[in-house]
View 1 (cartoon, rainbow, N blue to C red):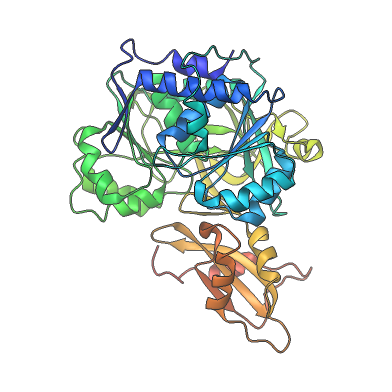
View 2: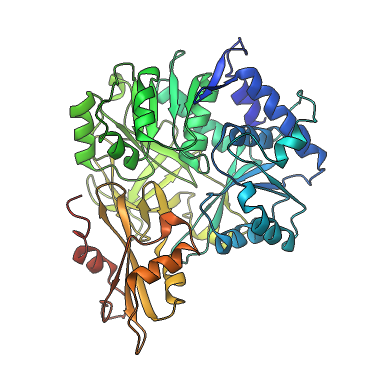
Length: 503
């Protein structure tokens, strides 16, 4: 099998109808077929070893989606990277994944190519969001006919990097079967209709935008209204043309600030990647008459649970992420590993055909994250109601989700602790009315120093992605600790919960 062949089977019979409308630039289904074929042929011409990784650090574009499809067709492994990542972050990804090809934006070619070539990468190409770049210049020479490379269900299709409390990023390995099974499950459970139109305003470097949204539309043969970047006013203007919208909570907050929201044609609003505040859920219902469908997933597992789409499957309950999806096993266990009672808080564990096989080149870490009977430990804490709906309580690994992006405190603390004037730091997430959670750092001064909070923020901006940079730095004489000397982050979160007003 090959995931591309399954997605291709969903294309409509008339390939000359519009598949993607990118602000007036129209792409037909035949364009998707031909464009991805030319890119796949170019990738195969590079004569890469089987299973080679293709690392992509570019801005969102339709051509970026075609590149993803081309990587699948060529039987290679897709490695998406947030374009906000800086040199110190990319160095780890390139060193660890050892990609055969790196594709980047032209503006970053100088430093990325130097970094890549120093680490043995043979090929570095550029791709920009204005349909330019050396990758397209090479591919345009190739045939627009391509027969996809056969792959076994368990063969790798993508690697998504996700960090842990140590701050070192881990590559979650997702197979063709993982991705296809989840896409087919969501197509049925979310009741995709023949005339559905997806408004696609999410990034395509992570699960939500690349796999959940794009796979859903492609597998269903649905037209996409495509936005390279989210713009609330522009999205609001095109809502009357769409039937399905997927967003992170921040997008809903910003849309609610628009004067006009014509949602009469809409069938389904979906939210994920971060907790949706119940106030936002209720305000959206009051404003539009629609109940947002919340779901829950991870890079390692794709989608796990979802509030129902169809009334016959149950009601949508705000503040929950719904029951387990068909075919997904879900349980909540105590610290001792025993099944929790109804509404008892415990550790969320899952299994199913969507769950990844493990972390890239980290067999010991992979073994740690699975139970002896094969369940994946999500690291999340929650409770299961009598109705089988899961309510997430928090994250046992102190993960902060800001604007839908994962931020791992230990990584930020490592950078902060290296800055002049900082003795120690603790990074936390606190409620924020726009981002759901905001990254906040509490630092203690080095002896004889008086750290400047704004200066520390500016120093970080040149070293890490913008979404990881603390929105506020607080200087404190000391960090609160328990009897064992561990920093009490829970206390810090309580102390600073009102920092950004009522959330």
